[in-house]
Image (cartoon, rainbow, N blue to C red):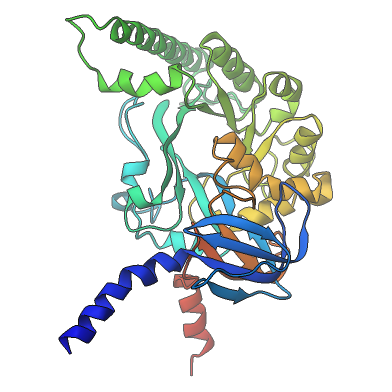
Amino acid sequence: MKTILCALLCALPALAANDDSFLLRGATIHTVAAADIPHGDLLVRDGKIVGIGAKLSAPKGVRIIEARGLHVYPGMIDSATEMGLTEIGAVRETSDTTEIGNLNPQLRAAIAVNPASEHIPVTRANGITSVVTLPQGSMLAGQAALIHLDGWTWEDMSVLPDAAMVLQFPIIQGSRGRSFRAGQTTYAESKKTYEEHIRELEEFFESARRYQKAKQAKGTSFITDLKFEAMLPLLDGKIPLVVEATKERPIREAIRFAEREKLRMVLAHGEEAWKVAADLKSRNIPVVLGPTLELPINEDDPYDRPFSQPGELTKAGVKIAFGSFDTSFSRNLPYQAAAAVPFGLPHDEALKAVTLNPAEIWGVADKIGSIAEGKWADLMVTDGDPLETQTQVKQLFIKGKPVDLDNKQKQLYQKYLNRP
């Protein structure tokens, strides 16, 4: 008995190791970066794609998954969420997105992620395998994290634990076409506050550069400062600055600020990015667009402005991605991209905007975002086009490991479907 038990225990690591190796056979493979492969096979070993083609043979010990009549796509990427940082928006104790103070570059969203969030299985059930989770609340809010939606700890989930620095660009409050009424802050007061924030931001960046030079000089009196330490990857160009700006004026000011500071910039939100498309294109600034299924931000805008902007930016040569800027509705990411297709965004570009484009924007296109040899096997197996609402995700893999598609919403659906 003891011998049998020992043999079983010894076999467990081998079984676990094979969990991320398989041959997916007979599906239509949508690589995104190259042509589709009908009736194709996909070989995955140790979590990475090692073969794509027709009539591949499975190495000894590798399981075979029959997928005839199904479709294989790369897992989708939501480029702006609060995933893992907030559970119930109205309950303060479940939200960890903000911190006091205007300048908090040392804060890291990655280490605050809750791997047990109920939003994670709901989101990945719709084919989303990775998200960028953003800190909020401060002007310089901290460091965003690109994470997989699977793992026991934040370290397990991390793709890029420090993917970008997040800046909510200062604006003159109340200047969105609304008049200042009695009891409200006056325009002069709002403008003064805005100028103070800009000055504070510029002085902080100047101090960070002095710190950078002092550290390089390695003087005996050098003292480590956590805030300035967090700024070094940004100043060195290793990570981009995600600037959250909506209107044309702050977008233009943010572009000038990034140029002065010699920073790589990613524009987030950008509801009026279409007005500065030429500048974004010439400076190679990508845009993470918010939900398409929303009303225009200005009363006199065309009703379809949110629907048409993705196509306009793509036509102008601006690289776009989509972000939910949410937690609960991250699962609707593919439908936000799909809603722009009838208004000028080519279908292939809509699919890229939730797969390959975000991978390129965040600098991980060598790992995820498309189906190619050498990349992680972040895959969804569907019965149709993932941008269509009736399509069902049949299987999901993150780094080659099958992910359970069960979630709270499905459990509730079954509970009330079977109600006596």
